[in-house]
Length: 56
Image (cartoon, rainbow, N blue to C red; front, top):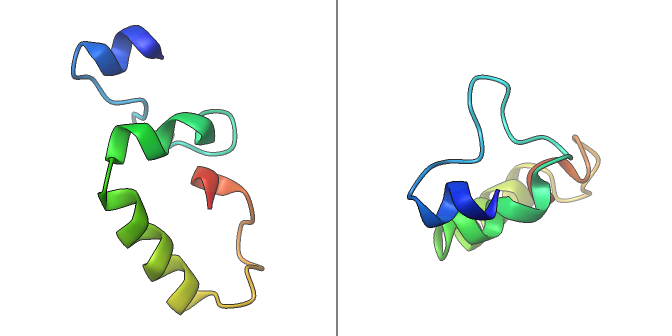
């Protein structure tokens, strides 16, 4: 994953990020990860929809 991100690539393809690559998504998205976290919290305040997927 490190080489992929360093080369400007993305850690996801058509299968998505899921739980396996969740630890890398915050680094890939940078400041946009916080926006994603806020959207997830607004839509799912109890955190019951796909917990842990994409590091959320």
